[in-house]
Length: 473
Image (tube, rainbow, N blue to C red; front, side):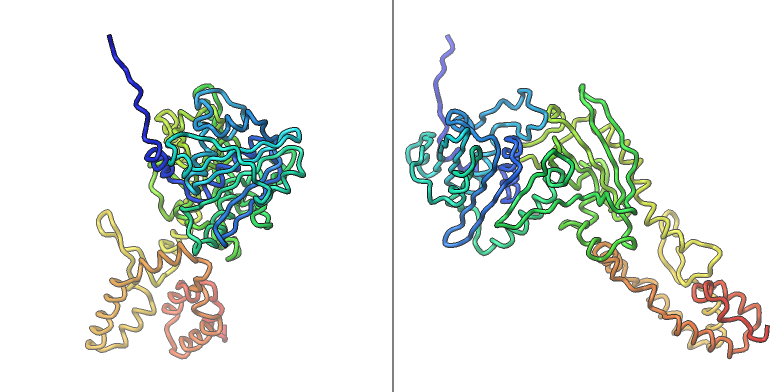
């Protein structure tokens, strides 16, 4: 007969593992907001202080919980991840409230009010470790908790507080708040935007409202919205909408920096996965495509329902997804289509250097299957210069130009183009007055008409041909 025995985990060690799932402060707070939205809250107030000890509290005006519902909500893994949920339910594992909170604090208190009846429960990890039991506390002294008085004025609502925030550093408090505001503005932008729901969600962080940040800049006239597509998989519909953001020349410097996000355009390209209107993952190609500068304006919105979690491999934190092979097949096809269109704002400009109708200072020099940038040694100004030099001067000029071509600062150019392209003033390196002065000098040289015709095809004068015209003509 097979024997079995109960081997309970060491709770103290288990708690340490539970706390190290990998939440950041802002991701943990977002997990709490998921619960508030699921509870049909429309107003969420967050209060965070650093002194004398760091303290966090969050109040919502959702439907609240009865005492039995609160006890169940405090239970770890209170929901079966495979059970069917309401279509707007943002949870999955029944762990979010606990794991998110424990990742930041050692003391979690939840007050909830339903139909004017207030209930309270508390997890204290020190108390649990001391007794080696999952002992849920019913606190009797909670009137001094921030926002508790506001909860008492509501008929329904829930207040979550974190104490003993041992994972947070006071000196980084302002960074926590700044990152939190940015994260909430992005992750919940659909709920914060007017028109997405009957009532718009309002979130206050230390009395300052969170304003929605739509990463697709959809209302800008220069944003390209590619035709949406519906993919039928596993009995559900996946909605895909690609966007190509405006080239920096179409935006103000402030808008360009805003839509770059903290990660920058290159790292922000790719798929943006939404589940029940909540942004889960953004700025990834899931290993199906390499993030390159030419595609940095491409962002693809994907909307999925919450019954496809197993096929998307969504983790507890809702910040990692691993699409199944069936899904990746369609994603690869979409990548090919959208990246070809997304590179046009750059390739169109890049082709100018290959324009045969203009005699340019720089050219692309083929090297087998590769290339380099080189100076155009058939440029009429260069040819005229060389004709005026003796052999020693020609050799010195040749050495200088070879060095100029070999040490073109490509890395610096690329970095500046990625980070702050709108600050580059290359087009104004020569003013009109300077070009006019150059034209006067050229006219004084009494060059042949053939040579002047050649100069008229250069970048200097192709748009200012009148400057080299013979005044007697």
